[in-house]
Image (cartoon, rainbow, N blue to C red; front, side):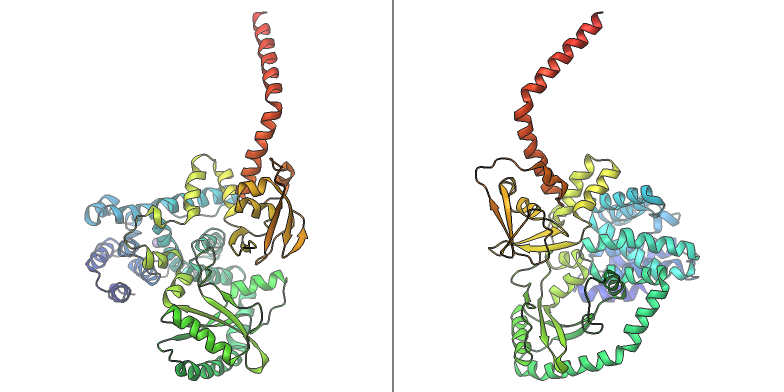
Length: 500
Ligand code: MN
């Protein structure tokens, strides 16, 4: 890797931006790491440059890329953070300082894990770009892991799967997540990895390529007839670790070839997305219920695309994902790309996802153990999307119940809930909801307080808190006097004792 390559790439993404800063960051880092070698035998600066290159790819801003080049300078060389501050200013100093403070997060037992996870979240709440740098640093470390002894490889891979990959997912940085996961999978379960790799990369490859070539050729003619130009087509391949997890679950038979691939079409405008969809549906018959318009109705995490599954050639199902370049970048690079397109100039706190602000609130008044439990409760579960009868979408954790839904809609709906209708069928209030369910809550207007037993099955922090708050009020009203009476009696006794 060279600094010239990074600057060239950066200029492609940010035309007109002065890149002199990147070169001076490189000069300092290169001087600082002079003579240092990585375990692989490479010059140390290679690690800094690779980290910065991945940052450039995910569309990070210039200060983040510069901080990526400098990220190991204060840790490993005689140059100090103070010198970085003097030369590059506060923003880059804060980023490098953030990364340095995170240090090497090592997996040692449950407690250590919790401490480290908290550290990551706190750093993230201050400035998410610190985590971007940490992810890219980790990705390059994983790519060069073979130079380390096996026990160290295992420890780093395990820690990546447990801490880094889930956080990357939270930030929508799917491509980084998948890249990290597949390397860890290869290290931790080598045999399974090899089996799947052989199956999907070698055995089925010819069959798959032939099939997609056929589809592409048919589409090519029809799209140009419709005047759609400058589009790109790519085959989306599910990464091996996610196939492995799917197989392990065995909750659904999936087609070994066609469910792990989709054809992505990237077009210049939103208008072209719908035109392309029209073209596809006139060639192949769409499957009912498999068309999703996430452009008109984005997923709560912001995901946008058109999805459709059609009866393709040879009677095989094939999924299409149609989107613009911006939608595509946001779907693979997450928050980082989102800032690139939308966040220019806006202040840092406005650019943070809502849950990062939640974390800041939580961490102030909880110890580490509770902190992680609270976070896991809401954030680390898989998410499902359910609809209200009016078509509003609510994002809930997996296995959430109608009560969780009711409190997500409105506290009053939660407090007064008596019955649920899931997809027009009567269901109990604790029935686990599935993705895409339409949920309606039947309320009793005269009821004032929630049922405390709901605490046994609700899954969201919000429902839990609201039930506690609102039933506290009842309990409080009912036994207020009783408690007062007891306290008086108690005080009186104490007083009496002391006087003895
Ligand atoms: Mn590093």
